[in-house]
Length: 326
Image 1: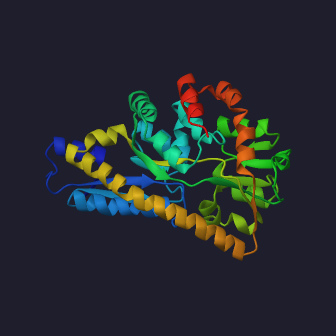
Image 2: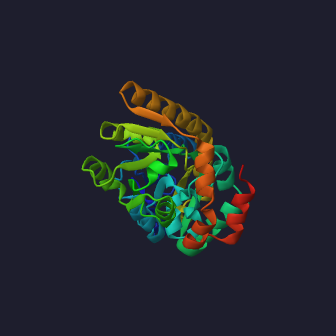
Image 3: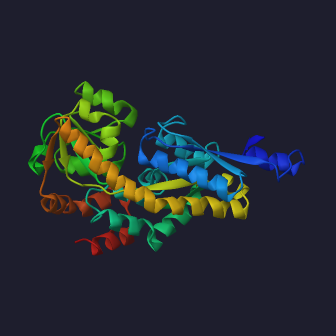
């Protein structure tokens, strides 16, 4: 018997289901393509959860936005109509503004610091507010997404090359304002329209981690990869609080344990995938450009206080981040 968690709870309450034999099915949505490491890692979690719960809990993985785009799935988590979502915690800024912060360029020194910050007391307090105010629980946020780089139809070698560059950005204020302040023509565009937009010349550039760009074949329509390492994000594994509360304590513990067990392997694979993607792009004739990252970092960090004011990050979060800069 396969039941969603809400239906299962109701059926058990009226005695229609033997709780020993019941199977709880949780659908897990991602926007990433099937070959992306987040999808592969999610399947590993599903396999491990099945082991730890003796088949009581089954996670079904739905990549490539089959359950909707990120904003749709997050809204579903809040309403309890979507059970789980695996994706960048940055999207949570739609509910709690401080979560937008990884979308601010060069706010973290490197991936390790980004990961540590996401596991800090500051982010835990953000998570607590998310549960209380919006019914979304972040079970873990220690899966690296890899540094974001530019892929462009014309070479971008210096900060000055950003002037007037038509760059696709997520429809998130942090990204938009960063690039506007740098003189770029920031163009908010849904991810689902970005490939076509780049192909048709509506935009000249987009930016993501190299493995994501390669996996989605952006190198086939834009032949310049500029390695700026301008954003570091973490993937979060999120669940509807309604769904979470319908699990037994043992089942909750099993799900969280499985997610954390996979984290180290996941992060190793991210680094491998990025290196392989960049090697393949170079072999396929893509122009790979390395920049003076320290100069870019200095330039964008000079605008950080302005971004804080525009987006509305909390003063304490901004001060904590700046204190860690190097």
